[in-house]
Amino acid sequence: MSANLPRIMFAAPASGTGKTTLVSGFLRALVARGLDPAAFKCGPDYIDPMFHRVALGVGGGNIDLFFTPPDVAKGLFRRRAQAADISVLEGVMGHYDGIGDSDRASGWRIASETRTPVALAVRPKGASLSLAALVKGFLEFRSDSMIRGIVLVRCRGKCADRLTPMLERETGVRVYGSLPEVPGAAIESRHLGLTTPDAVDAVRDKIRLLASEMEKTLDVPGLVELAKTAPAFPASPPDIAPSPESPVRIAVADDPAFCFYYRENLELLQALGAELAFFSPLRDAGLPGGIGGLYLGGGYPELHAGELAANGGMRRAVRDAVSSGMPTVAECGGFLYLLSGLKDGDGREHPMTGCLEGVAANAGRLRRFGYLTLTARRDSLLCREGETLPAHEFHYWDCGNPGDAFRAEKASGGDSWNCVVANASLYAGFPHLYFRSNPVVAGRFVVAAARWKGRAKCATPNRS
Image (cartoon, rainbow, N blue to C red):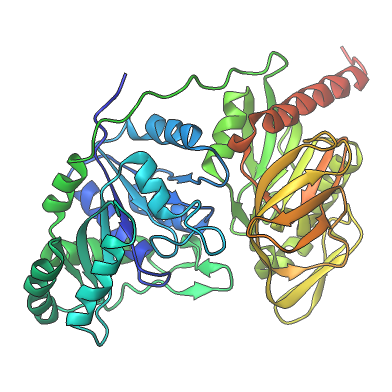
C-alpha cells in the first residue's frame, strides 16, 4: 500500500556549498515548530548524519544507490520516513555527480527514484544574472531535474532581495529565501571532512543559532509545503527475519575514536537477533561481558593514538578476544587499532593491540578514495570465494600490509589491488561495508558469533 510521505532534498551545484549547515539548521527549525522529522544522507558519508543526529536528537540514515538497488534503498527510506512528519534528504557532492563522470548513485538519481522535490542551494559569490544561467543549466540538464525550488546560501538580505525576483523570472522556479553566513555558527573541517559533533564547541547552540536565523530569512513553512507535494510512496518489501541461532551479544566500539557506523548496519545486526553492547576503547577497562562478536568501526584513532595506547587493559582484552577466534569485523579505523602500532599526526608511534603485524602512518594524501567492489579470493568470515561486495574507502593513514583476502576494483574503473586481512573469524581492512547490500554477510557474522559463544560456554567448567 502506498503512503503519503512528505519529503524534500537539499542539493547544490558542488561540494562545499553548505548543504550540511543548511540541512542541520532546517531540521532544528522543524523540531522547534513541533514537527518530528527524519533525516537521510545521500551517499556513503558518516559525518553528516552525525550532525543530523545532533540537530534532531535521533539518528539519521544513509541512502546509497551504489550499495543497494533502488527497491532496497526505497524500502529502507520508507521504513524510517513513515514514522516521521517530514523527511529531509541531504544530497551528495553536486546534484548530478555520481560515480566517475556519470550520474550513477548521484543525488539526482536518488531524488528521481524516490520522487523527492529538490531545493537547490546556490551561492551567488560575485554573480547575478549568471546565477540564473547556472540554475537554468541544472534545470535542463536532465528531462526532470527534480529541482522545484532555490535557496540562496551565504547571501545577505539585501543581496537576496535583489536576486530573488530576477531568478524567479529567468528560471521559473521559486526562491525560498536565503541563509547568510551566521557569525558564531561556523562548523570547521579536518582531514576526513567536517569536524565530528563531539569535537565542535557548543554544536547544539550553533545549530540552534542557524535555525533561529533561518526563521528570519528562509521560508520554512513554504519548504514544508513543497515537501508535501511529493507523490505517494510505494510499499516496502518484507524485512529481514532473525537468525535461528541468535540471540547473541556483539560488542560495538563507540567513542570519538570509533564512530563511523552506518545506522543500517547496526539495525540489520539487531534485526538478525544480535544485542549490541556499546563500549569505549578509549575509556573502558575491558570488553562488555557475555559477548560472542566484536565490531570495530572506522573513525579517528589517529587523533587519539596516545589515549588508546595508554589503555593497556582494553588493548589486551581485544587482543585476547581476537586471538581466541571471536568473530570480529574491523573497518578502517578499527583495522588500524588491530595493528602493532599507529603513528599520530606528529609521527610519534604508539602501540595498538598487536592482533596484526604492521604500523600505520599518515600517507600525506587521500588513499584509494571512493566506491569499490570487493571480490573474495578465498573463504572467510563474511564471504565465500568468488563472492562480491560493494564497499567504500576514505582514509589518509595507510600501512604496508593491508591484506590480500579480497581483490578491490574501483567502481569508476582502472585501479585494482589486494586488501583485507580475513580468515574464518576475522574481517579487517580499510574498506567500509554496508550490510544491507548483502544481508547474508551480516547473517554470517551473527551466526558465527552465536556459535563461538556457544562453544565458549561449553568450554567453561561448571562450578556449581
